[in-house]
Length: 150
Image (tube, rainbow, N blue to C red):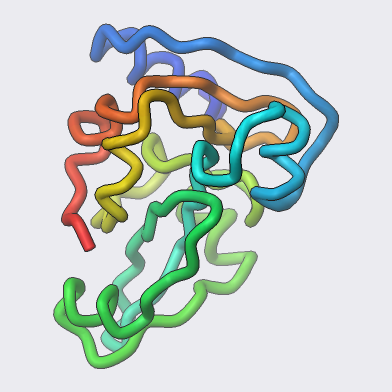
């Protein structure tokens, strides 16, 4: 089962209505927002991070925001977090950097999230591929990700 198929199954199993939007390949949130003709804040940025202790975590935030490194480290109970390498991301998540979904990863990881996403009526995320985006209600992320809010 591909990562995208896994995401579709999770959405169906949870009864989440979703829309698939095909577009040219995108590699950044601004490019995704432009392709979808939405604001950057409606796109999801999912980053795989590693704590100083070696734990892999995912930070999910609106596409127009930057990571608050200290807040994420504190929430994860670590002194420091940093980006995971591209090879490790592919192994752990099942896709390349730049199209990481906020849930459905190959490996189970703790998910940390900016609360602004669940207050957004609809959000768009890549399902592990660069040329599609899924549109779901922002509130659905709370049950899909079971995040720790940062």
